[in-house]
Length: 364
Image 1 (cartoon, rainbow, N blue to C red):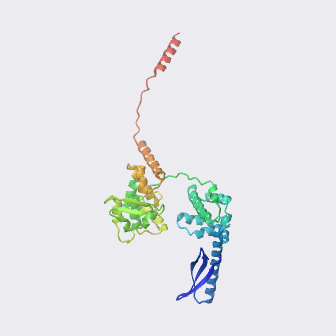
Image 2 (tube, rainbow, N blue to C red):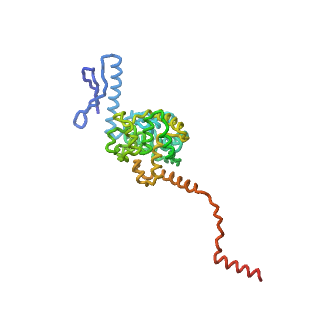
Image 3 (tube, rainbow, N blue to C red):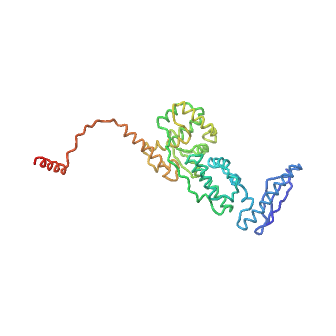
């Protein structure tokens, strides 16, 4: 298949585009590149456009044979990952560890089970099991794109044992600690308002950042979760804490909350906790743990709490039930110790019979 590089003159210069004949019609791809009349710059633009033309030509020919083009098969795994252009904390973390993994320079078509196993061990050597599990799963997802683009025939990471997670203690705030935070000034008042709001609703910080006033009408909060993409519906008690916190500031239009960047959030939370005399490592997700735990402590059932938090699987919510069980044990242990001075229980009938037999033996 022949792909041609075409030019079209316009008022802002000469635009470049690709054209090829397939399936009985002309197909076009505009490159968003222009010749502006400057010799050196135009020469470099044409060079790049020609490279794109060659790659596209090979890509179309390979697609007809059910193969990935050679330029995709030859790119390194880290180049392939960067071309995916994924966002999100897990993808950013994966990029960081890939950049420090020596074997990330191999061609993506050379990635095999041995490579995946080495990357798994590399992650475990520098991360906790739980963190390594998430990043390895993200790497597995990235390799699925390589399979989809026919660079790999199968996902090599699928044959490597997943990393098992280890149970960690769920950190949360008690009701008394939430009240202490509420009574303590925070370096950023909007951060304080958002954090306390999440302590009463269980929302994630990503969802709080995206909330607009149009999401809150007639006491009902309607929003789509950033993490799961699921649509959530939450009716807030009228004049309750969450409702009052929402209405405390309406100057951030169109957003409900105006929060600082991630680094500032972490720094302000630590200063706020210290000022309130709270020794725990305060982070924003702790507000979500706090909401779940306090609801369960006050008698809410797991299913309801799961729906409030937007969990797809109730098993995710069950970890909070363990915290509540621990509180129950603490409550039982707090009961006063009593010296009961119990008398020995009466002997059983068989024991009395044995005692009589022993008495007669001694009498003889």
